[in-house]
Length: 493
Ligand code: NAD
Image 1 (tube, rainbow, N blue to C red):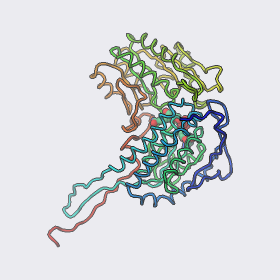
Image 2 (cartoon, rainbow, N blue to C red; image 1 turned 180 degrees about the vertical axis):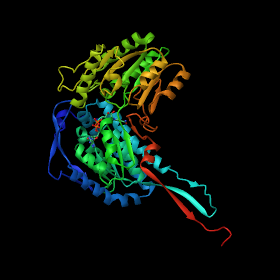
Image 3 (tube, rainbow, N blue to C red; image 1 turned 30 degrees about the vertical axis):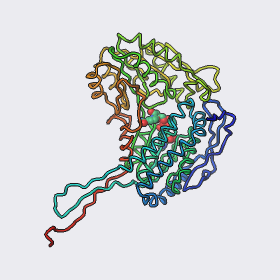
Image 4 (cartoon, rainbow, N blue to C red; image 1 turned 90 degrees about the vertical axis):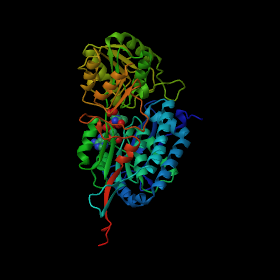
């Protein structure tokens, strides 16, 4: 496969896509897209206003009926063709994804395959969706349920998996017969436009997906406007709370931040635990909602785990995401890099020791390259234990026993994912039951998710509401209607 070099990717104009047409923002404003990997300007992106968002919502509204009229097998076929179009364009998509987001090329390829698989799965799930004939209290009645699309779904997505996460929403929306107004994160606008090109190549009906670039203004309009009937949002807990306010009574799926504990008990297979933890800490430079955000280790195995994590960090090859051998690229933006800095400073102020890394790397094309970092003796009141860091950090916290580990894990205000390493399946099962989060991986990295199983935050914590994944995504993108049919009196009156 040919890999593009940086210089071959010339700056391009990225426009809004509304009602089947590429167009500039109504006030012609643009923002610059700069690669975190090189510092080069990659393109100029149309910066949508609220008015542009309203135009996109209106265009989606016009497409709504024709989309809902497609048969389930036509929508399934569309999703399958989109999956094929994504795979066919992998050689174009992968280097652009790497340069715009910052992840190494092999991770970009994995993400592209994951996105394609989500469309493939949605094609399968929708064609197997069953509804029911319900028992009726009255012998003259027949009651059955329909699952119907919401109509116009607003979708807002982050920059860490800029193809994978939008595909979770777009695949299920289209499969279920909805139309979409999608606003991706500004720092990954260009790859978003590439995904729309795949949808077009697959024969998406006009107006079925509308793409609006920009920040909070068009985002708020999409969420609050009465022309959107449901909202899917993946992003930070802070923005998610605002979204919940603006969405009012609309069906809302919120996939928010995590601060996932990885618990390593003293009977664990340490080789597997260390390797899974390193994957959880350093994949995508730690910018994963389900990262190993804090490592809760029992005293007896602490030194071995720490040595193992340092050795894993030292093997990370930080560098240009398109270069051979790179295993970790730059962070996506200055906000994440500053948060890394503040969490490390806070941990050290509270008595922790930086054992490896701990600062931005020197001699790189931009200052977004952050060293893989291992911090030991992190105190429980530190930011790294209480909040999401979202960077390449392994903060090690010592715990006394399994009860203490569960208490520390559950003390956090977030509850998305956790992982537990132990060789005792009874302990594993008890941990899985008691950890307050939506996903628990046992003897597997916190970062593992196959895309088909329910995924989301624990009720009452700040990691979100609802579940994505496989049939759960299809369920969210549909609403149930009960239909009561009077078939008359069987004795013929
Ligand atoms: P963010 O909340 O800053 O932005 C997410 C999206 O919301 C972007 O498109 C952004 O432009 C838009 N937005 C920002 N302010 C808005 C507003 N006031 N109204 C409407 N839209 C607005 O998040 P981010 O920095 O892009 O992403 C990182 C966060 O996403 C992390 O906290 C991470 O844990 C979380 N995340 C969660 C999951 C999950 O499945 N739970 C997956 C990936 C990322």
